Image 1: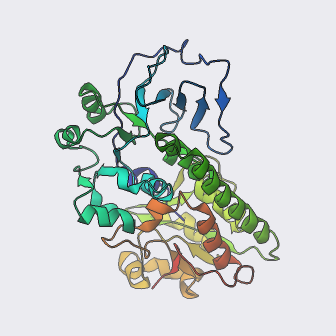
Image 2 (image 1 turned 45 degrees about the horizontal axis):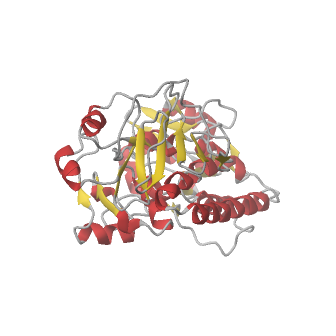
Length: 382
């Protein structure tokens, strides 16, 4: 389900914000006023938000996996004086123009009714959101080039208030160039979260830029409530179908670990995931023979990577037909649900809507529990 390599590569659509940058120091980053209010962040581990009478501070603690760096972004009302603390970006809010760099950022803007503030994006062909695509077609969201090498000249001319960036490490020459131009870079680490609700809670990261904190809380609370509701329903199942995932990429079969984001979905759906005991939060790199030996008689193959049909599986590797899930036509893929330009919607929307993902999986594994649910992300292989 969800071959894990995809999530840190396919969702790499990068950049970041405007404001001024000051050198931070570890001693002063922790300074808080006595009237500080901590925003409730229950599941996400990668950021915190605190507020006082002068400003809001968004502290990004996990911009990428195993990061040893953290970043402080200070938001102040327009025209207010800058606080006497160290920060990585100072932004006047509410903002009027934003650039984001991962498709996972777009659903948050849409849910907050702020998609009209999005003015630039790299690799727009991968965007699936209908509202965003309409703005792209109308020339209201500007193409910024490839995500590995943003067209900084176009971006600087746009003068966005905020550019929200995505990176796998701190060595990013594009971001450095943007910062030197006077536009600040702010990292969003939603992709590095390890739990379904942890990823979804990053909608709260975007809310303070628009003054939409209450709306973000309401949206996330609704998602959390529905996720927990169907999770409890899954516990009632008397059966636990055996499940495996992924497919071969070149000579390697990538399989999500038991502790990964994908593994958590399978656990919450009450599946008997055959690799559930494996440790770590990424993916396993396996050979075909070891997967066949363990999963030959498995009930369901959930998430067949890029494959959308049995014919594609046959063309790629005729030995896929040895699995019972192949023989019994019990293979499901998220690669059939695409946007208007071919972008896979799962990559864009699934991190923001884990409740829908979980409903899909429960319906596939235990159709009697959610009989009226219509599959959204996952579809039977053609």
